[in-house]
Length: 226
Image (cartoon, rainbow, N blue to C red; front, side, top):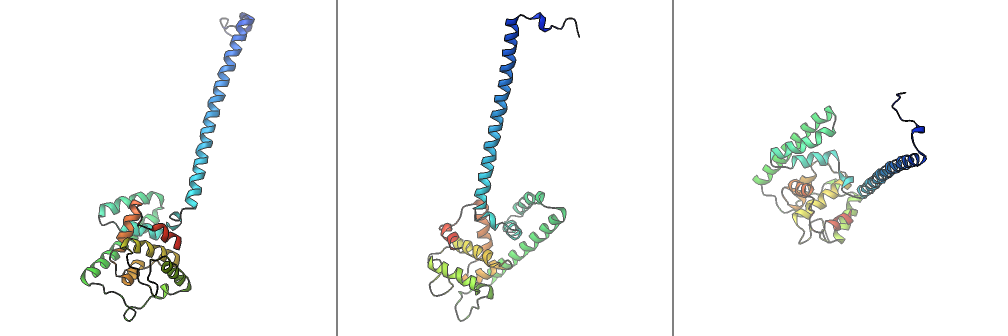
């Protein structure tokens, strides 16, 4: 040991007491800091638990599927917006899934463009009982249950499948999206409802409120139907 290093005999009882007090206070300060950090972490964990619980009860989170993501990206009219949206999703996917996502987005964009061209060239007639055949997917017992609820809520005419007076295109797209998910309609869902209700560009309408989070009026009433 270095001869210059002080030993306990070099201190008076009073000095030793002060040193012990100082050391104890330093230790207490560290314990307080650790306790505060622990409390902060526990509070954050509680916040995260609350967020998870909120998400579990949020109907929007249960509706997020691969098809939803593809349709959302493809709904952007500006290709640069589609590229940006796709790049946000790709880091969450595996390499083979990234390639598939790109293919599916291109396919969906092509479908939407062809659908839009078709509606621009040929004006869609108002459907009527004698010239419109309801697809089987909209005539199942589960579908009829949804139709009846929509009628009771005032979104569908009481004696059929047409939109009630005053229902907007945005509300129709929101209702169609909900019904398609519940009924498991994934292919041509927009085409089916566009033909049924004679409304164009439903995918773009859906993309608008899915992107901005600004839902159509009475969206909660539609949620209650489902």
